[in-house]
Amino acid sequence: GAVVSQHPSRVICKSGTSVKIECRSLDFQATTMFWYRQFPKQSLMLMATSNEGSKATYEQGVEKDKFLINHASLTLSTLTVTSAHPEDSSFYICSALDSSTYNEQFFGPGTRLTVL
Amino acid sequence: TQLLEQSPQFLSIQEGENLTVYCNSSSVFSSLQWYRQEPGEGPVLLVTVVTGGEVKKLKRLTFQFGDARKDSSLHITAAQPGDTGLYLCAGAYSGTYKYIFGTGTRLKVLA
Image (cartoon, rainbow over the protein chains, first blue to last red):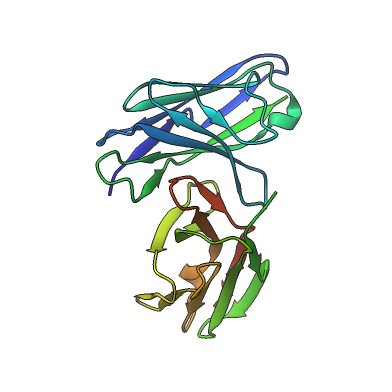
């Protein structure tokens, strides 16, 4: 199957700093990627839809100025958590839609963010 | 807001037992997927169902999509410890590839 990578896998940062998480489709092109967050013992909550070459679409309640998304190429989307606070600590997961099929999303392994 | 409710939330059973997990919504979905997630990893797709009433089998797992495409079930026969994990359903509305995840069912199979 198609492979999606995320970097870093774990990150610890101080409160007030910004953190960038990368999501890459390694062997296919993805015009659409999704960003999710998952709190311990909970399900995945969709944060935003990332579209190559255009602005991301955010879900209700997600601050677009706090969670900056850039999808500059067909294989890379980045999520930047700006001015991070302890409550932003979570497991962030991306997924990518294969542009050639559009019928399956492939998930990355996730990034564990801890804000001190 | 979770639009997809899963039941039960938690399930602990003995190896060899059968179980069913339910995924219910008041919304109609064009397609519905089931995933299994291990701790600290991304979810892994098990199946996609798109037709009302559709039944798919994957070894000991049987998936069914409701006739009205509002609900789905996952049945596991003769559960094994390797089936332990978080099971998630996810539905997509017509005309979109955006999937909304269910509340999740945490399964533990004891040897």
